[in-house]
Image (cartoon, rainbow, N blue to C red):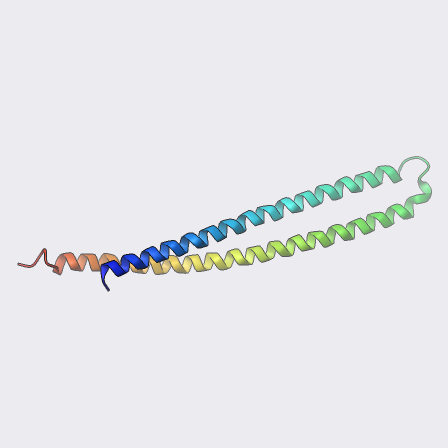
Length: 134
């Protein structure tokens, strides 16, 4: 294979690896966003739970304990539903990231094979080419 064709192929591999790296970076940013979303959701849940606790556990609110428990149960179900959505998004992102990383590794292996082939061709051209002919 001509050396120029090998260089061209290596450039194609480099471009493709760069595109995959960008996609992986975007996914990692989304994973950070998912983590932040979980933390924000937990924070809001804790604040609301504390608000309800202090409101329903003050003097004169003993008769409203059933309402308090119902609100807490409803809030917990909503929290778990939102958390499940975020976790499923997180799993989908991890799967995409794994797929892109696998493709990246496959491209790197191909790139290394072409680099070796290029090195061999350059060595053969130098050893058997016009510069060494006598």
